[in-house]
Length: 367
Image (cartoon, rainbow, N blue to C red; front, side):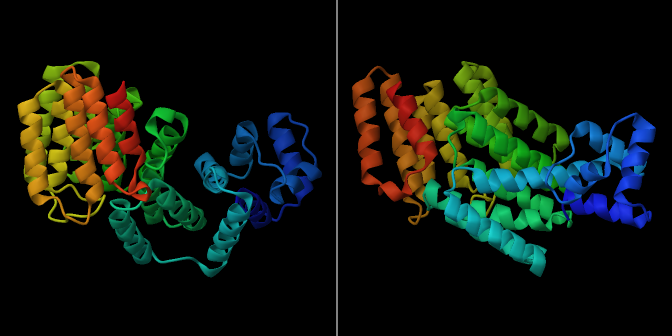
């Protein structure tokens, strides 16, 4: 709808002119609005600040959250269209977004199908390709957020989008993870609320980035629901990696045991989706965790378990396992040998299939 149209609709429903609305706000709050202020708001030339949103909420007898939702949707569009996207591409995205608004956009089922495809594509495509494609979808879905279930879709898309920024950057990745969590909350879908937080926690913990945020999101996921789920599994392992990187060996191992119990109840049969956590992927989590803890025997066992079931169509994850071995070598004292081993594994993987996570693991090995 847009904040301007919302103000106009509420004003007209009361039979008020723009001048009458300005007068009502002035009378109630002692402000100095005139008709032109209201006109500029309604034409979206200016967005009302937090104070005036509260004034409008009171005068128009409409919950403040309704106004805040519209402002956040506008911010959402700006963020999605403006994040490292060339002007000509941003122009195309904006045009698609408004066209989708006029047409009504894809159905909820169609969006779920899109998410399923992205879940599969993420496992093999490079970060740059995913970022370009998902940014376009974010612009489209924000036009349909009158439908509460699409806040869940938006949250899951934002989680994927966040993965295309390095967690060590802090600002961009964490911003999108936080926005994803808030969007999932607005959907009222408990499973989505847990999943987006858990996926963010394992991403940050695995990357070794923003550990305080990884802990926070994991704790939130675990507080929302202790029912075994893939979101909870991701949250527990994300928290385990954060503990390992802080040197809390006992805490990391305790969380890994908890993760195993969650997997036993909620593990996936699906093998090739980012929305799935099959046994081979749990062993990728365990491999890096145990390598970080210096448990070479346990790490090698996890690597062998992962390789037995890892689909041949996902060579990037084989590279992950090789980098874990490089980390083990470096931690054992052979820093140059570990870095060389890991670099050889990176070089063997086509550059277009490299992920930011792999690059961050290389940085960890070198350091």
